[in-house]
Amino acid sequence: MTTLKLISPIDNSIYVSREGASLEAAQGAIAAARVAQRSWARAPLAERIAKVQGFVAALLAMKDEMVPELAWQMGRPVRYGGEFGPAKERADHMASIAAQALANVEIESSAAFKRFIAREPLGVVMVIAPWNYPYLTAINTIVPALIAGNAVVLKHATQTLLVGERFQQAADKSNLPRGLFCNLALGHQVTEALLGAGAVNFVNFTGSVGGGKAIERAAAGTFTGIGLELGGKDPAYVCDDADVARAVETLVDGAMYNSGQCCCGIERIYVAEKLFDAFVEQAAALTNAYKLGNPLDPETSLGPMAQTRFADLVRAQTQEALRAGARALIDVKRFPVDKAGTPYLAPQILVDVDHSMRVMREESFGPVVGIMKVKNDEEAIALMNDSDYGLTASIWTKDVARAEAIGAQIQTGTVFMNRCDYLDPALCWTGCKDTGRGGALSVIGFHNLTRPKSYHLRT
Image (tube, rainbow, N blue to C red):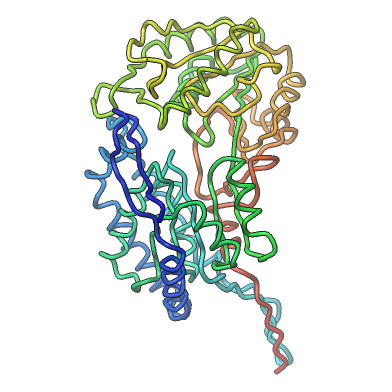
């Protein structure tokens, strides 16, 4: 039996401890989910939508309790109020487009033939969710999967074990059929055994590149469908016609919010020569205004990273860059809570950086950003594409046509103009290169959680 321990970043204490489910118990839960799914798939779509919306409402009704829980589990300051507004936005949008997304594609309806393409649920969908946005990332797949007629098994990250339990509480309080949704506390070995046995029909994983490779290896040969959202090193380009003040305000927040632990957080910024000095000066001033501290304090605007080892990685990347000639703009002494060997890490802006440095090439996932000066669009495009990852890219300009032309040349899943670090549920959330494959939300999200079935009826 595996014991799962959640170490709180606030004080390094064991906040939650759970015994991981055995392989036999997990198999039993999945078997029950499969039974529940058969009748659920036959229920009218409007009924499924209403019951899933009730499930989400039951979850959001617990938000006052869940906000401090998030601070204890992964360090996000309570002042930001959790992630429940966006969770409702995504759930509501997917409910609103379900009828259109899941509708039959009519080919012919005549005296001779009726031909159409229907969409059928896959069966049992496993969601392996991460800790950094533990409700939002799970909602992305759970809601459309259930609406489409699937059963869902949730395996949440050990760092956010209570989030999975909150989802289960909401399912139990709602009118979802019993067994249709199941939260399982699982260790890696049991998870791999389930995937290796083809126990589920689809698995959606959000996490590291290494984790994604492990998922693929475990499911190899089972033909289980896989959706992966993995690492990122998202760039921003501030063009020579950009609104500097607006760009600084948004990009600093995009780099530092959630202590930089955002899937589509800004990790590198390229600025046109003529705007570089003004941008850097304003960015440093805004970063210095953060208050690093205990996330339970309403005055704290930057909490600890989720684990000390994550903070140590960022510290190592930063120190390597400084030794290679980079210059730090933020005096860490302004943040006395920053201490080596703890997850409390001061925000940092680096200049005089280049792509020989790990901090500009490897995922940092922390409150550090490198800023480089560029001569023109061509240089910026080349640097933005010089990465193993491709989730989002942010372009700052007053010219929509210019943004579209630059965006068409960037290897990325989403192109933003004059914004960043946002997930629009009407658009497909997807990536390329080592960021993964598949797509969540939007009509495409429904299509990835169902399979096409063709009907050719001769009348």
